[in-house]
Image (cartoon, rainbow, N blue to C red; front, side, top):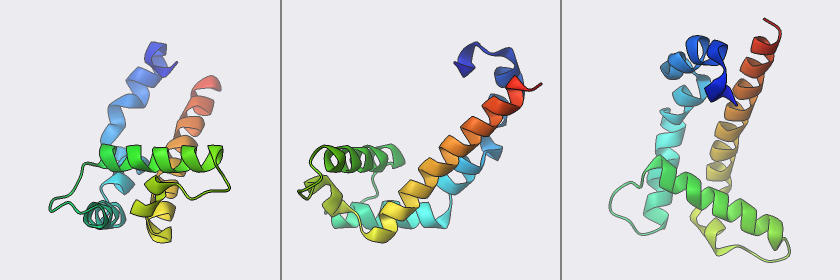
Length: 106
């Protein structure tokens, strides 16, 4: 919906580098998570953020569907890693909602 909104395009999407989610995505916490998850999976190099996030999505969706069993996708993560990725997602949803609400009230 934001891609069709002039206020969003002019005011908010142009500030991509200033978004809290982008800052957190480039933080030491996220870099540490990416490095450690890549190591746990046996890679000698760090996977991309998108690859890690896709594995995280597979983990949580499979856990939601089969809540009584352990998802093999979740084995890639420690409790700390899951909290880091969950916080990133919270930032994304929070700032997306806040900006949409600000635009609606302008």
